[in-house]
Image (cartoon, rainbow, N blue to C red; front, side, top):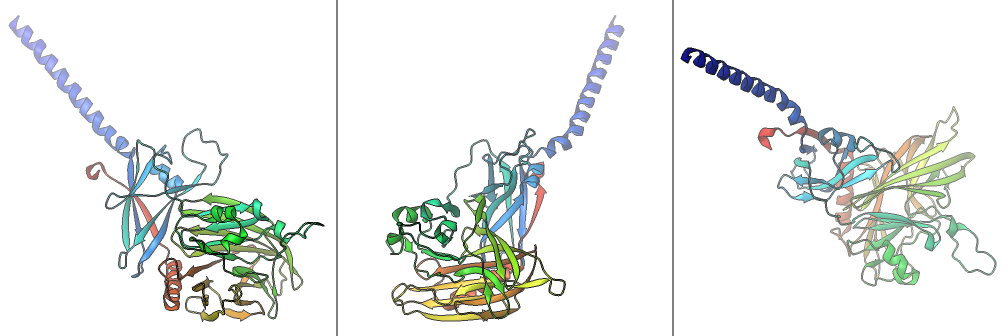
Length: 428
């Protein structure tokens, strides 16, 4: 009995040990698969410049985010810098009506956030992670909309500067017995703000006679008329500038809080016998004075001359009447830029600028200073345009404005590089 009993006990213990071994082996086999289902991943951003890069915008395709964080929700993620600080973020929606039964975010375009690189800081790391709570609503720093209540204006802004351009209602003749402003132009206006929060809706709400005065938030003191304003385009035939009229259609693709993207389309116009149409895509980023503009011209080019010469302009007389403006114009081939510094008698100094990478010439007509570049039908021409006011922001002098332009041109030549990597269980 004792022998039999001992044999049974020994057999039972052996089976228990084998079960534990199989369970342990199974657990080890499952660990890599479990490790892939992460709740965070690492982002490393690098660049080559020695100068500071304030408000650098970093973008990650949402498809890549979903690879690292399957099923992540845009309202339940957090982006943290290397010190653990939560950063504002934005996710663009490129397909608002898309159906997403697997929950992989097929409607989304990019995850966007910003980092302020200090001088000499050439690398920064971040973590993107799932959270259980709902992320806060972040401060709006970019905004755009069409303004039907003001003759189809289209207006946009960052926390630094605001702009508007003009729609078909402003170009239309006034009906009999009706008094209305009529202006035919595709020039770009500037609204000089001196507050960081959005002002477009506030200014349109208070009306034309108010926003032409500085009542504490800034003012519209820029003159456009039939000029190119600050960054309008046209086709240059060597002697004359041929331009579109007021925009015909608009489309908003993303609207803050960090980046706003929209398109304006222009009907066909005659450029010295060539019919031309244009679509502009604007990308405006928080913390920036210059907007990125991608102009795509469509035209039937001849075999002998497959390109046209595009021109981007700055108005020669940008100030309000009575300001006795002193205007200095700078043409810098090293940065492919055209800029102005305008000192006014009572409204302070303003700066305007265009950076047109690949530009190969300058010119002018009676209304505009121009920077020129050949364009091919259907291929986008990328340039940057914007302005500053000495009474808002950190640019107070012409020297500082030229320095800003040169540093931004260097940033455009050296875009940041973004890499993603898993975070191992040992380091989490």
